Amino acid sequence: MKKILVFAPHPDDAEFYAGGLIASLVAIGDRVKIITITDGWCGSYRHSQMELVQVRQMEARRAAEIMGTEVAFFGYHDFTLDTLPPGELREKLIRSIRMEKPDIVITIDPMATNEVHPDHRALARASGDAVAHSGLPLVYPEHISDGLEAHFVPEKYFYSDDPARYNHFIDISAYIEMKLEGMRAHQSQVEFLVEDVMRQVQLAGLDIQTLLEEGVKDPFQALRYAILSQAERIGALAGYKYSEGYRYVRFHAFVEDLLIQ
Image (cartoon, rainbow, N blue to C red):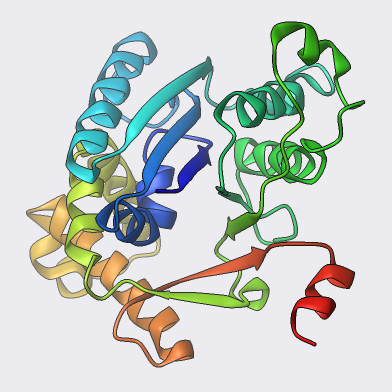
């Protein structure tokens, strides 16, 4: 059994970006823990912020039950990660790695260039630093007094919307429905994401009914269509029906060269 740690900026991001990989790992008996960094309190056109915090945490717990994972929360407010004191988030992530001692970390790719959300960019940078330096004992040596030893993460899966960064593809054809059910649990976000797109469609003067068909009546069907289409596009790059793409990193390039000799 391997231990997997997932860093997700918002409560639905783990399932959206890596739900297929997570489901495949759980299926073989690995232990997966998702750490959600923010409370997601900006993601709604309908709820108040304080109401949304409770709703999204409840949805995240429900998604974890469906996916067979653990879930924990750092509790930062949505849209604030880029305003934190320098190094604060990085230290918390390294502390988590040293506490959990994962074999695999799944997190957002700091090398992706097309990320528009400041929380995503901030977590990408901090988590990229964390997985690269958590194995160095003189990085945050105060952790030693808390009984935490340095820990090198052998495998890193970096997710993003940038196909140019992918060097590793996961066949999620057998797990696509589990990924979708995990996303369905985030009902407030399903409604929010679809409404956000529909508002833009309206502003563009396009025919919503023709474009979204039944998705106009059922937001989840619209999101399902989008997720399946994305998984098909990525799958076409690797010869799978449905796939997720990652930038996969193990060891230093010198060590990798030795492994293949």
